[in-house]
Image (tube, rainbow, N blue to C red; front, side):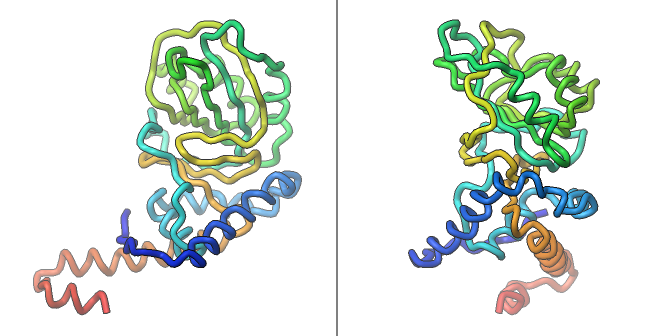
Length: 257
């Protein structure tokens, strides 16, 4: 579903307020990881009744028009038939070819997934000198992630074994696929990273579907959910007007007043 959000010149103070709304919620997400159960499972499940554009428009209604709360055109849902996914971020930066890259133990990353309360949305970024040349994720990792509590993964890079990941049933977002990789290292785990132009911190609430991924302000999640319903209802009325037999430009103009 889509609804028109009118793009206009936004005064600086309003842009600052919007940024503060989103940034303050994101900064406190890390500190609140141990309290993630405050967002009830039924609330998380309710987000799946909406699509990412509707959720984004709800964020706009709450926090103003942001620029960086959704992934860019490089991030694609490679298994859209698995449906929408929502979870809390656990992050990692990796290299997929460089044998001389900094390497940290993978244990810390998997321990973070295992320790996270609630569903985990794994978030990875390939920081190799040739990002995407080697795969950052495959069917073995999909199995391990799923067993540790991950419900999906987004990779700012490439993946492989797509059919195997499909059999596992783990939603995966990435640039695309390649068949191989070189030396594969984790270089940093569970720290803020930028993936698909979105700054993501450990514990952030991430929603993904066929249009990409959206970061939902954790502190405002329930209100964003309520606003998403309002967006959907308003959109339904607009579409009903478009579909009506007596539609006219005059009636369209009247509906906008």
